[in-house]
Image 1 (cartoon, chains in turn purple, red):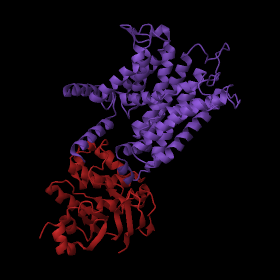
Image 2 (tube, chains in turn brown, blue):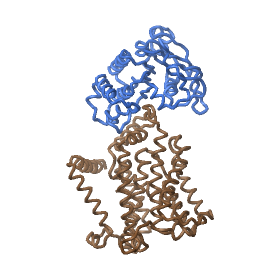
Image 3 (cartoon, chains in turn orange, red):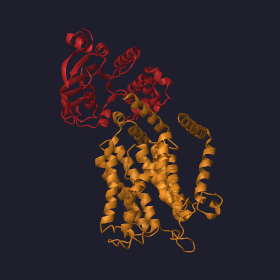
Image 4 (tube, chains in turn cyan, red):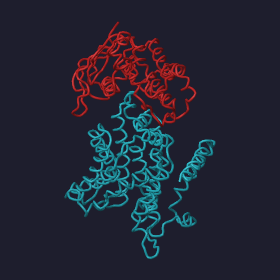
Length: 369
Length: 238
């Protein structure tokens, strides 16, 4: 088992070293090619050449939209869990706040009857999610350890129960006719319609690119250094003069912001939001995606989020020996996570520091210090 | 000589357990003051109270004439009070240089930071050799040096050292204590917590003996080194 582990590890180092040693133009052209690939992906003319990659059981463009939402969520949760090292088990709660804010402000089934356009509701949704992040973080981030995990778990459940039970939030009947994002083609037909999921996917893809650029810059600044120090040793960070509470709250609020963005986009695409969209499982899926991809690494979060969401959809409509694989998707998912924890606890594309921290922690357990 | 740090009747609780029972001590500018005592006597707890990562139940802490009892730990660093935590208090995933850089987190004067970095690397040539190595892969002694060097990077007026010799080989212990003396001679006041009473008392100007959360004795380092009760309890000589 050790040799397998070493083999995998050495393989990764070879790839990552080659990547870091590659000249600048080469790295940029690889990144450009990847971006072009993903913009082209939902077009039938393109994906029909990709063999088994397109899903058979459902519309590939729709699947890609779902996948892109998960990627956005994974990038957001990675700030909280990966950078600042805070365990958030209810991240999907922020998605819900974003989606429901848009729904309440725009839908004709809402009691408010404000009937705002989507674009006007978006900043309100983002603001409210950030506020909810700060409200949740202020009492809990002063504490350490498992409190945050439990409180965030409770938060997501509270929102789900509130959405199910309250008349104002419409329960399972939900909100319908939520307006789409604005924009029309030259011939007057709307860009974001009901039938074609591709424009939504392209919108989310573009936002992912922007968010990743922002998060990357943040992570390389003083803020990022503060987050890393908090994750590695909170006491030591404080002893070096890092205002730990402030930066933890920052990480939490930034993560919430991105979660709210994903929720607002989802509501604008789906047209319909109800309490059935809010399962606890979603929070767990996103967290597993971040851990699977490599906590603390933006590329890892993207790969993890994409892979998890895609594989779940890929199982749809496939039967083996008369068993519908989709029904067993979470079993496979659990299996993959267990295997990962044994062979690669740092994730598929880990962060260099993160790997060193894990090693250090193992050493600490061994010496009992 | 002016008083830099003044702790007055400080008590501290861990849950319901009282860890410090009204401790008072002072550190004057330019001194090395040692705090010695057995395991669990409250030495590290006193350090945590001074650096501010543990709130105190009652009493007062003054630094440089200012009451800092209720001041947050990170703001105390900005006032010039920096602690090198015991043992594994370094950032394991950061390289040696990144760790040292974190020490200068509160500082904006780049030229001064660069100068201090040169000074720290001169003090600890081992760290200079391993500057690109990740902290978690250093040996215990090197980590200890890194913790001290990192604290120095904040250019503190008062440096708090928590068990700098813990777990080190005898030769390294000698080395780290001579570095402590050197740092002090360059103008940094030091409050030192140690189990290695022999070395600590030999190096310190003054010292306090801590027993179950109370200060039971104080005096100059030399006085305590020759005190029969201290000899028996902490120096292993009868």
